[in-house]
Amino acid sequence: MTWWGIVIAAGVGTFLIRYLPLLSGTRLARGEGRLNRFLGALGLAAIAALIVLSVSDLWWQAPHWRGGVRLALGTAAVLLVQRLTPNVGLATLVGAGVYGAAGWILAD
Amino acid sequence: MTFERATSSPWRAAGRGLRESLSLVAGYAPIAFSFGVIAVQSGLRPWQAVGVSLLVFAGASQFVMVAMMAAGSGGLTVLSAVLMMNLRHLFYGPALATRLVALPRRLAPWLAFGLTDEVFATAMAKGVSRPLEPAWCLGLASGAYLAWVGGTALGASVGAGWASDGGYVAQALDFVLPALFLALLAQAWRRARWPVVAVAAGVTLLAMVWWPGHVAMLVGMLAGALVGSRRPRAECSQEATT
Image 1 (tube, chains in turn yellow, red):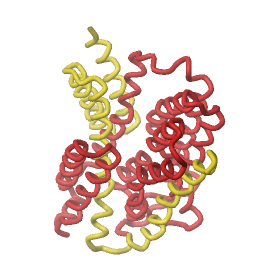
Image 2 (cartoon, one colour; image 1 turned 180 degrees about the vertical axis):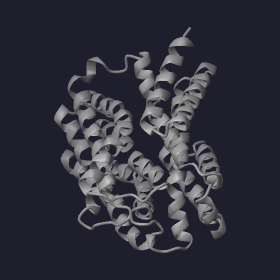
Image 3 (cartoon, helix red, strand yellow; image 1 turned 30 degrees about the vertical axis):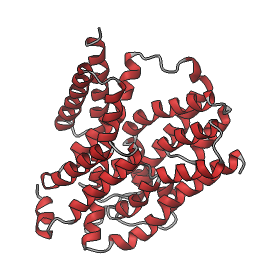
């Protein structure tokens, strides 16, 4: 398999993994049963799983109390801004800014 | 679908989606930049790195693909690793379909192409409070895609000199994706849904002891959704007023 062959096959395979279930999903979405509730809960479950994955990646880059404090401050900033202004973009940027600033303040 | 129809002009909806992709753009650009740098350091030409982002558009699995190819792994091994990593996306389409007002067949391929973890999470968080217009989702995915491809191009062409300076700005950018997911969780939060969040997070954390991140995420996500599917109907309707 050539280099481009691998890239194209990976692209097509990834696309089909996303596309075929989306087509069948429109039929499933019309239902009211347990499968429908499962799919409805999947989004929130995915967000929770992504938080664990991304935060643990950051934690293991520098597993130290300073890292824990930075994560806590960044998280608190995100939740506070999201509560005050329902603006995901602003909450994200303020949280990242607080996390970066905390790293500077807590540096040795 | 249980939502009432709430549509606007497709172009206006796409514009709103594009505007609301700004937080995704902020999260994607630095990661795509890193991918561009790493791809070039692994021996790819800049245009090849951009080609990978253009055709595959699947963050983590692109890093794995480039690393395995640089290590001389066989084509089928690389391909199966990439597809295994992306298997979790199997569940995104049907879940998104439950939140859409409709799914025009001509838009379905474009929506599917852009259905990454972050686009899915953003759409589902928004879909808790209102039905989603397909054009809005398309605008959202377009912003993410442009940031991904543009970030890769920048990283591949000029990134080698800037890579991993370890400064505080770079560290702040490291927190953009976790911050985005936290903000999305806060936006989508409903009190009656706490077991879904607790189980998904707990099972993911536990599964990471034994499995790589993408497998742990899949297991945690399915466990959380299973808990959500067990809730009695009365609780579901109560949730709407919480």
